[in-house]
Image (cartoon, rainbow, N blue to C red):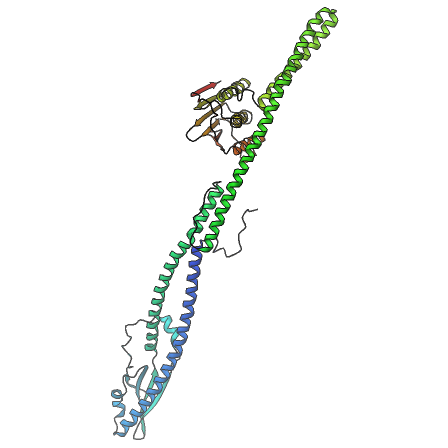
Length: 475
């Protein structure tokens, strides 16, 4: 199941920036407005063209009738003289025919040539063109019809005028819209800049840098978000510091308990084992004074008890090393780590473990010393037991300027299996390092194996002296 829940919506908008969505919405609105405006212009143009053509036809019809009557009253020749008197009328085309229907002349429209250079697209002409209207006017001379004048509406000039006006308006609207979109693009960039800053701030919080703060923008709504973000960062930093102090105190309490248990094991169990061993030796000496058969049985029992005491003593030593090495706090940290490496070597014949240290102080305090010890102990144990490593390199260095200890442990084993859950040992290391404000990571080594990198803030204890560079190898 996905950890993120997407809001419902068109897939076309998903993943797009807010600026892109706003710009696309504005462009879509402008396109819709342009289509509506074009529809209104075409409807008005059709109405205006139809009215203009009908008016021109009515005027032309009356004018032609009056001209024919006037020429007839002057004594004939009206059909031949008509072109000289009725040419040049706007929005109409006049065709003169004789009685047989033969075209005598075609009088040009008065608006021909006014928009002759304007090329009107066919689709626009088809949208604006109105139904063709015609009028037939008979030409009568001496009571006899000698021909007729056909007056037809001509809408091309009106369409050209509408197209020219529409083109000019469209160019103006396009220029204005481009200017508006450019200004909107710049303004949105400035308005959305705090959101990008907020996204970067979220990444800082995700990385654990709670001290990061956002500048408060001038926009009131975004300023509230920035202030809440800064307050959240401050609260998280306080919570992390409190949690760190609590974890550190918990680690110290655990270390104190381990120290007390180790002291009890060393001071109480050790003398008891020694006393038992001394008494068994006394019993063994006394058995020489009794009869041989009883002496033999006492010797066997004594040997068995000595063997048990040896096992108890070995177990006690292992428990002391596991709970808390008694040498910690009494000898330099380097010596304690070297002793641990030597112990690993003695129990793992044929394995090569190399230890290199540089710039270390004698001690860094119980919490840090025991953490470094546990980290080495756990990682080397995993490398030998689970990784079947043949070679292990341990590098422990101190950076006094930065006040940090750096521990790198690399082996040539089989490495961690993909998806393997960390064990309790690694979980304990993570808790200790986190409580001390440190960091760590596990990654594959080259060409194979595991590499563990640990960094811990550390300051040498007062009076601690830096140790010389040391490199040791055990095989």
